[in-house]
Amino acid sequence: MITHHWPLKALRVRTPRLELRLPSEDELGEVAEVAARGVSGAGTRTFLNGWTELPPQGRARYVLQGYWGKLGRWTPEDWALDLVAFHEGRPVGVQSMRAAGFAVRREIVSGSWLGAEHQGRGIGTEMRLGMLHLAFAELGTVSATSASFAENLSSVTVSRKIGYRPDGITRDVLRGEVVESQRFRLSREDWERTERPEVTVSGLRGCEELFGIPA
Image (cartoon, rainbow, N blue to C red):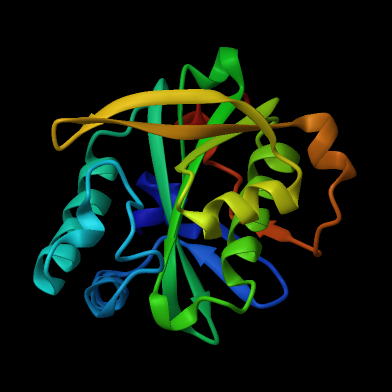
């Protein structure tokens, strides 16, 4: 069985409305279709690499290649986990977290995207809260960070609502111009004070080595 060699396939994070997990290949195709139909925040600067501004087929292929590439490059010292969010059994978006040197730093960086047809119902917030439970309650994370353009109001709103605090800015170059992203940080202490839904995690046993932490 693949879970014997890659136990992350058995990992499940469940919130009241969602299940976050790695998809099957057919389900990954459905995720790509969600991206092809449109991503929340499209039309504004949402991601520094500009993938949401690609044509539909380009967005779909970006999602596929990004998913395969992250798994292929995974090491306990440098990893990135893309969990697909399923609502009523169908994929609606992707919630990711990544870390370098996690065994020592115990810090993760999160990112996400949600199909445009599913926005406005609190799903993005629930996705993030599920991921944060996995990070803090199960993996022993000390702090979680996130960054977004100021005009990406949905991401900024989720961060502030959950309890992230401003953590400075990042300056990058996009199309020959300097753009600024607002960084946010959530400490373990602030996470413990956050009002959050019930979250359950299963299938984590055996994954610890992949995350670079003791079993």
